[in-house]
Image 1: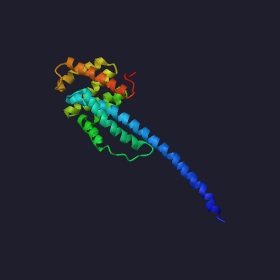
Image 2: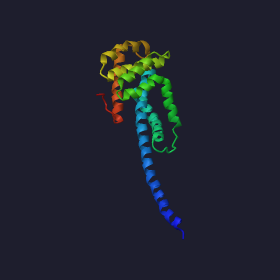
Image 3: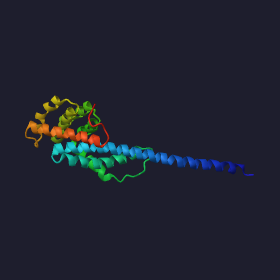
Length: 206
C-alpha cells in the first residue's frame, strides 16, 4: 500500500494551480505600477523640461516634450519595481541619467517642487521655490524663482506672482522687461495646464 503518494498528488496539483493563478495577478499589479510610475514621471519630467527652458532658454514646448519622454520611461521602470513583482526590465539607464541631469540643472529643491506644483500643492511648491531661490547657484535660484511665480499664478494669486517679476528680470538674462516676464509666465501657466490635461489630471486647480 502507498497511501502517502496517493494523497500527495492532489496537493501538488493544487499548488501548481495556485501558482498559475497568482502569476497573472502579480503581473497585472506590476503593469499597473509601471503605468502609474510612467504617468507620474512623465508629468514631472514635462514640467521640469518647461522650467528648464525658462531658466536656460529654448523652446518651452519642445523641452517639456523631451522631459516627458525620458521621465516617463524612467517612471515606468520605477513603477514596475514597486509593483508586486519586479519584471527585471531595467533597460532604462539612459533615461534615468537624463532625469538625473534635469535634477542637477534645476537643483534638488526646485526639482522636488515640481511634483507638488503638478498636484496643485502650491504652498509646498512655493516652499521649495523659496528655498531654491536662496541658493548660491544662480541657475538653482532662478529655477526656484520661476517655480514660485508659476505656482502663484496657478493658484490665482496673480498679484503675488507679478510682485516677483522684477526679481525675474534682474536675475534672468533672457528677460528685458516685466511685461516680457509676464508674457512668459502666462505661456508657462498655459503649458502647465496642457501637460496636466494630457496626462488626465485636472487642468486647473480647484
